[in-house]
Amino acid sequence: MRILVMNPNTTASMTASIRATATAAAAPGTEILATEPLWGPESIEGHFEGYLSAAAVLDRLATLGTPFDALVMAGFGEPGREGAQELLDVPVLDITESAAQMAMMLGHAYGVVTTLDRAVPQIQDRLLTAGLLQRCAAVRGTGLGVLELEEDPRRTVEVIIETAREVVRAGAEVICLGCGGMAGLDAEVAAALGVPVVDGVAAAVKFAESVVGLGLTTSTVRSFAPPRPKAISAWPLSRHLSPVRDTGRLLATEFSAQTSDI
Image 1: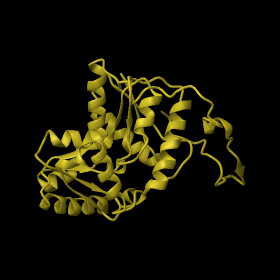
Image 2: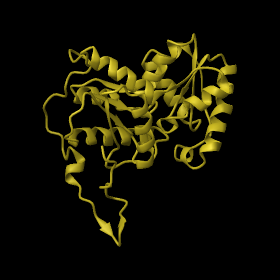
Image 3: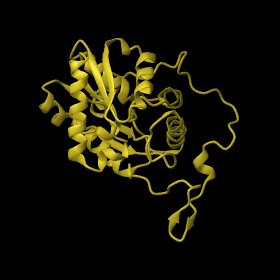
Image 4: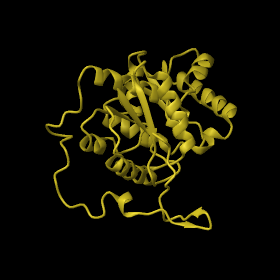
């Protein structure tokens, strides 16, 4: 079984940490592939960057050319999963719904610890659309930007623990880590809090293994039917772009040709 894990931003170091967490969670015999889009924002902190990322992820999937049995989308609360479900003929899972579904199996109410406060409404909307918000006690931001998560790992864990304590006081019995960049921090946070902590990347990988193992995939009879054949100007975008270099530096208008090995 091969599972592709897609980091929605273009930061390769974050792809590496996501890959490591997914690999650790995978069962023997499951191969983890991981990559990120060829273009788009280096981190996603808001709707504008979220929609750019969704298009970039779909572009990457449309041109990847590597077979896999399931896709895990490693963005928390971000758009694009439904488009991938229409595009692909394999199961597609995202870490938002996977984390919440796993958490609801472990406690009456769960909570989410994420990055910036501005991400909170976006995550709440995603959980509401998925029918998962009713059992969410709270969603709280740590005040850390996505890229800040990697700058000082010790401080990152401390801030996550502090914020998670607030979420537990609000009634959560289980904590979900609300960013792919928090992958791998669940055990340390759980030890400090004394409550289960769900890493969305790990949860999505285990759900993907189960769905593939059961021989199931996305229903295409209605909501996620394949896109109707029609002309889409300049699509896929990456096929019409070429890396352009100026004195050894990538120009702002190009896409990066240096992506993670899958």
